[in-house]
Image 1 (cartoon, helix red, strand yellow):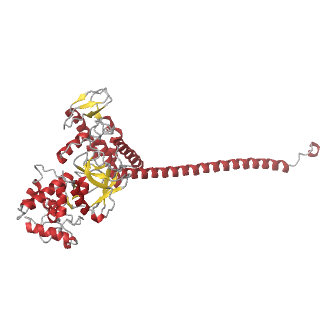
Image 2 (cartoon, helix red, strand yellow; image 1 turned 90 degrees about the horizontal axis):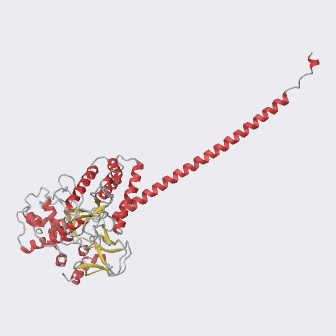
Image 3 (tube, helix red, strand yellow; image 1 turned 90 degrees about the vertical axis):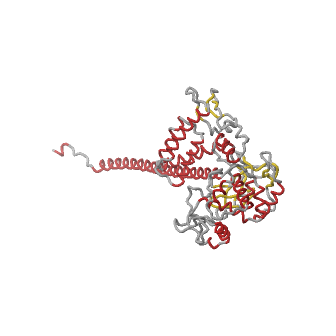
Length: 492
């Protein structure tokens, strides 16, 4: 294990611009694995623990990505004529083309000699984040070497493939080793878009290394969460729950709503370790049943969950009738449900998807299953863009229902604050306010209507009274005006 003291010294140098004289953290020996970040005092929920800046950052540039983004400021560029005119093979905007950062990148890649400098190549653009490590200071490179790196058989593949894109790629073993090491560190504890590190409902479209954050260990129910400053890409880490002095500050390397089996496979294959946190050791995942499926026995209403064995294909047990099922049997049920729901998710009709989730999916898959949760998150994301083919009442009821459903799952898991929870609570608050306002307006209309009806009734009563009075007056008037009948003799 690399000395925590040396790591702390290098981190202090890296974080010096933030001028934190009384840091709430320190690097120490972890009970989870090797080193970790520990709280130096009691931290309240929502309190900022630390800020971190990227030691390395660049475009993720996967094959499926559009490549017309500036390699310095990352802003999108026109579809044509976005490549550097100096022939380095990097996309750059006219403003950044004059900056020192691009000049350093450009000189390096021009010296290597891109095979096709006028064509955007995802391999070259993606390599830039790694290659920038060559021009770091000695302390900065030492910091990279202080960070955990899983040196598996594939960590050299990226640099080896990138070498084929240049005529004069470096052969100096020291330079190649720096890049290989950087790749290994990025793969272990770096960011690479949000595909490998989606802990929250937020976008981060770059490849980056945040050194202090990289020292943090994983927990499937983390006690911290992070956000990014848009202009600087600096990271802000906050306490998701109250954290006691001396307690380890953890993050998560996996998606929040991934089931036990998928998380175990990801962590083992991508990060090289097996997680043994309380959530991973509980087949029900703290009663959230994110992996839960219905029992195959049609006479049983129980849920089936996977055994905790650490194996990729464990048996499953029904919690009611205790029937065992093989992994293959339960995966048929899961795959059927996933296919049916994803077909609706990918359809053009949002109303059809909402109706399917509300009325039909519960007949073949529990509402707590991660596929249903992902579908509900997809609905909320689409509603944030517009109501599509849903009427106002359906939009309102769906937002309320789905926000509450997902928040309840988070509560069962014991998840504290996060970007996703904040978004859900904001939507809930907004929708509840809108409903309260609507109910208030309706109540006011009903009050006004009742008032009008009362006034109308009083008017009718008054009119009736006047009518009676008029009739009485008319009757009295008629009696006074009529002359008395003449005597019979006079008439004769």
